[in-house]
Structures are given as structure tokens and as C-alpha cells.
Length: 238
Image 1: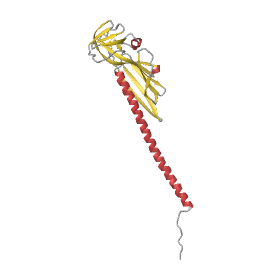
Image 2: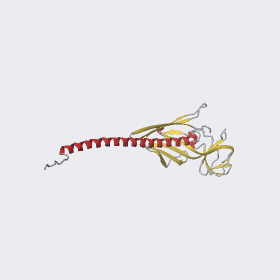
Image 3: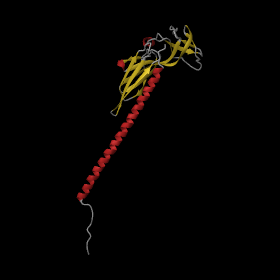
Image 4: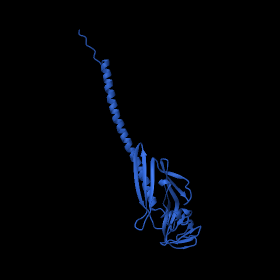
């Protein structure tokens, strides 16, 4: 009777198999890790682009309708301030504290806001010489607490509901609002985070060109940098 030899792995063969499996696992792990990092980087960049684009679109919409000649650049070009408009139009006449307008104001309440007439510079706006607190309005008249001492040669007026300041604070871009023009801003909210730097620049207007505001916003997330630039033409008809 012939005995059959038992087949199986020797210790050396088992060690070789374990080493090979370890190498294969390491290679697969690196491939998966690389793919994961690539996905995370793309996701982070997409989120950064979305956040930055929303901020730029928001600031563009606000600046386009800012009170004419109210934009000023502060704090080494890292802060910008302007008057936010609520309404605007043409008026027929001014008498003391009252303005009769050429617009239908039915359903609008301007109480607690500011009437701006012929604002020709940031100094006028923040100094208060072109800004008049509103006590109320009817369908065709706006009444202020003080005499309206300005008269626009174009008979234009604007209603401002707040001064606004946009400023970098640490790694955040902060939006301050709901304060009186010329006063110190109180409470702010984040427009975006991951801010490395922001630069505001104002190019004054001329007879041939409108004034413009340029914004350069640099963001960074997970060592991924992103630079966004925006140029906004301002309304210049006080």
C-alpha cells in the first residue's frame, strides 16, 4: 500500500504569499488614497469657487445701486464703505422738510430711512450734509425731520436704508450694515471664510467714463489658492 504525501504550503511559501499580498494591498491603497485626495481637492475647489462667486455677485448687485458718490475705500484698501439704496427717482419740488416726488410711493414705508439729495462726495454723505432722516411718506410726498437743504439740478433723489461696510477680519470677509451713515458699524455677518486677502480700489469717474470699483479677493482652502477679480461701474447721477 502506497502512502500519499500530504500537500500544503510551507512556511516560506506562506511568507512569500503574505509579502506579495502586502505589496498589492499597498499599491491599491495608494491608488485609492490618491483618488480620494483628488476628489477632495476638486470638491474643496468647487466649494471655494462657489463661495467666492456668490460674494462677488452679491457685492456687484449692491454696488451698482449704491448711493452715487458714497463709495469710499478705507484701512489700507482692505475695507470699503457705501450707502445702500432702497429706492430712487425724481422729485417735483422741495419745501422745508417736505419733498413732493414724481413717483408713486403707495405701499412703501420710508420711516427711519434717509433721503439723499445731490450727494457729490463721500464727505457729504458721511458728514450728513446731503442726508436727511425721514419721518414718513405718503403716496407722493416724503417728509424729513430737518430742512432739506440740498437741491439736485437733475431733481433726483435716493432713499438710503443703511450705510454698509465690507471688511476683512482675520480669514473672514465681514458685511456690516444697519447703521447710520457716518456712525460706527455695530454688528456684522460673514460673507465668506477662507480669505487670504482682499483689495478694494476706486477709480474716480470723469466726463467720459463712470467711476469704477475693483475688487481682488484671494481665497485658500486645503492649500488650494483661488483669486477672483471684479470690476463694477457705479451710478454717477446725483
